[in-house]
Image (cartoon, rainbow, N blue to C red):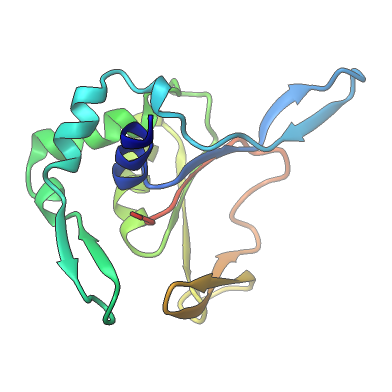
Length: 170
């Protein structure tokens, strides 16, 4: 199980399904924040292992002690890239997601492709100061410091069903 979890973290990109509208037991409509992407939902654990085998480890990047996971070998191979998108969207059907949110910068690549596959809009979450309109901002901690991300205030409508694809490979 530990190996499966490590593989899932390596390629699943910390995917969360958020905003799935469901009826609560009280009968009132509410928003339920989804769970982390579960590797048990993947069509093939062999496919996940194969993708993981094509990631390149770059030691001490961007700072000493950080093990950077380079995804460019996956992006450079159409079969691998398509397979990664299939794995990320395996639990969702077109029309079940209103928007796919991608976090700067690697998240953009996967989220935009997932949005096309799911026939949904794409919403970029960028580094602070990179979006031209009014934004919501959120600070967060990194292994090597802190950062702030931003999203346009009108990027999502209330009640939107959102799939969030983050670029974390840990």
